[in-house]
Image 1 (cartoon, rainbow, N blue to C red):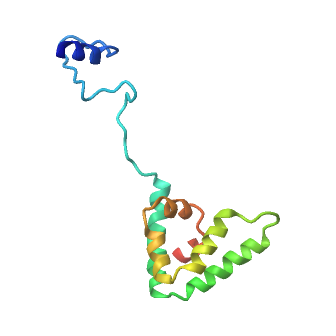
Image 2 (cartoon, rainbow, N blue to C red; image 1 turned 120 degrees about the vertical axis):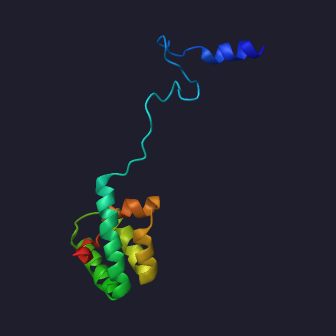
Image 3 (cartoon, rainbow, N blue to C red; image 1 turned 60 degrees about the vertical axis):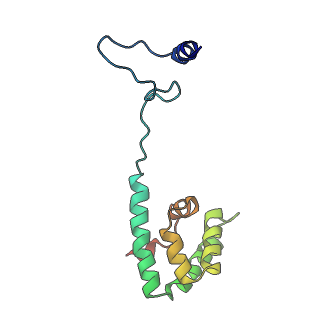
Length: 126
């Protein structure tokens, strides 16, 4: 019976070339190429810029008030529906204290990565 199970597992496998060993563990019918966990270079640059911004916020927490004012001006100047990302940034800037904001913009959470792509704080990286 064990030979029957092994034979059933081999159905659909590509034919191997003579002299080359084939491992069942290294092949999957759904994934034919290796998966690379490479980061996007744009995300890497944004993360580095936000690390510098977080350092500046920790040194001078008063920049948060200026950031809130800038976001409010941008939201007021936009006709129609406001940008949801800016609204989310405004919530972050108003609800968190400066230390929490610094920690958040450095975080590797999906939300932090997503918001870094539309950050109104890039002026602090200069």
